[in-house]
Image (cartoon, rainbow, N blue to C red; front, top):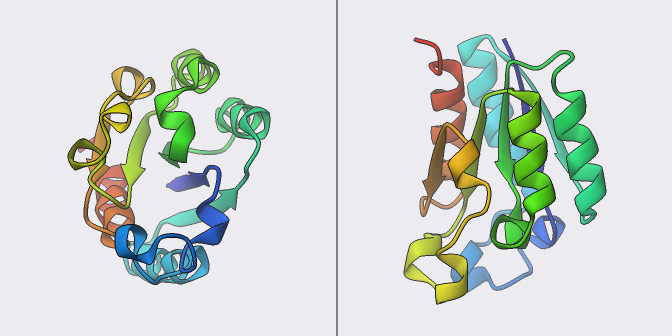
Length: 143
């Protein structure tokens, strides 16, 4: 099994950006934690991050060739991007939406996810462990 972890805008600033909301872990810290767990589960993962919506769309489309599941933290694009929604819908690669913070307990504009209706599920609010929960869900998606 091969899982693609995609991270959207500003996630490259984790550990520096609003640590009261997002914590002190960097994206590299989260990736290491996920890689360690993936090794135990005997699954292959790939981590990518982009601040560019179009690049995320390209990666989602390319996921059809070689990935079984996409785990997507679209950041702010979660609440604005019809393009990401359409890419997820078009590719038919099972996609899990993930967030560090509980977006439903934050500003009202964060309560609406454009991608949630085309994802198999949404995980939020567990900090870096949201990614571990997403990994476990991805491994068991068809089980």
